[in-house]
Image (cartoon, rainbow, N blue to C red):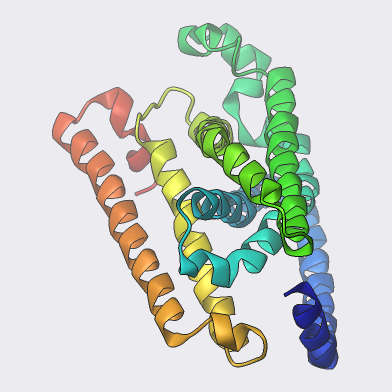
Length: 287
């Protein structure tokens, strides 16, 4: 299978070279715009950058989660997109580097980084053991270290699976994916708390991070469909990404859209019906 993919990939290389050049040009324009934004208004820059980072980090984390789900449950849909999921999960180190500006701009983003504000706020003082700059950075590094390690192991074993007739690579992927999907969910919960919920350190929600994690999976299904449709027209993926498999991706995407919408509305409904001052701040400041 690997040799077949490599042979067809070499045939498509000239076309992808054009995509790479255009992507490089767009990337350079983006870097220039980023520098301009920082020099113009660094406060707005960090706020916008955090939004972009928390959006795009959903891609590799979501790919890793869906990949683990496939290793646990199987299914033809997963075999058709497994290489794309592995490629997406392998971009984790890139997202780690792209997230470093968030660490540099913590003081502009998070109110709990202001010593004077914490000293005069009982709630922030109570949360200080968790919400402090040093522990925040340690958690950030830990998230990506664990995510990257799991992605690298699954990708390596997947390649070895195609190179041997033995079953041990498959077994290893299944063994890792069981506790791995639980660990991924826990890390996603803490990451959502750190990067998003702590923007409003007085506000709390027991379902917010679940919404964020579901958004990661939803983004993955959407991206796999977006990439899979054009790739289904070329060998060797035209044999794997059949119309039936593409419909499977669409079905999964619809299911996660409904689940994401359900959890999002549930949070809004509970907060709206309670109408408590400590719960409405997240929505009130965003009206």
